Amino acid sequence: MLRPIFDDLGRVNLSRAEMLAEAEQAVATLIERSRMRVAPSNDGAEIDAAIAAARAKLAGVDTRAARAILAEKIAEEEDARRRRLAPLLVEQAAIERAAFDYAAAEATLRRRLEIDPDAVWAWVELGGLAVTTGSLGAAMEAFRGAREAAKRLCDAAPADPDRRHDLGAPFDGAGDVLAAKGDLDGALAAFRGSLTIAEDLSRADPGNAGWRRELPVSFNK
Image (cartoon, rainbow, N blue to C red; front, side, top):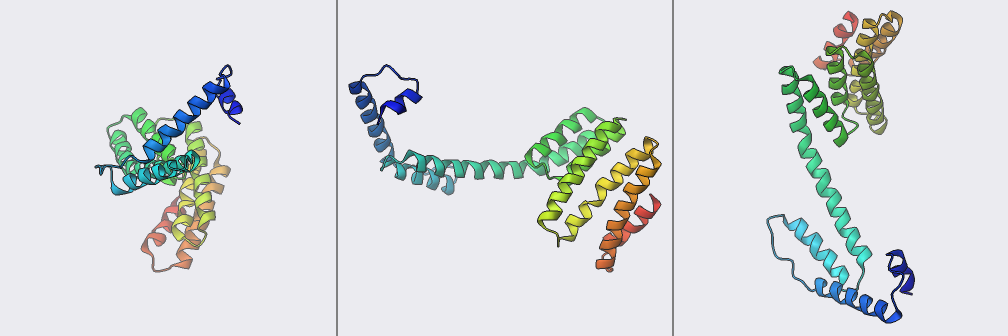
């Protein structure tokens, strides 16, 4: 039973006695760790509890369950950290752009999108930045990313008007790029796509001043 385990570890020349000795030592180490009390730390009660739960599994030498408990908590902590970083990155990108450091702003926005590829407005900002620097191909790619992200969010929550609204901005961005490239028919089609969304939102909620404001913007374009 032990031979395949040690073979997978590249330990192919161990004798039966050596394998038994190492297995016994591994079990003893795990059981000893299961008995270690988790001292209160500054890391938070939830983290201490996860470590304690993982160690409890080691009493039965159930390393798979212990690792699963820790992996789940690690994923939660990483996700929380990413969420805390997101607004800081957005603010940093805005300041970098205002300071004309477009390369830094692009890098910051891309880092923001690594955290959440569905951050529609980060895509839109990235597209606007590319327009500013004259990289129309990169701008179209960014607005395409914004449209795909907005569609994913809208599909997940079709009744949410804010999600529907997010679909319009990529159309406007793409329209600006197409107009700059001389593709007026393509630009007009993109702007009409944005206008359709603005009209739908305004019709559904006539008292919403924000939705009403989108109409003259679309008509102007």
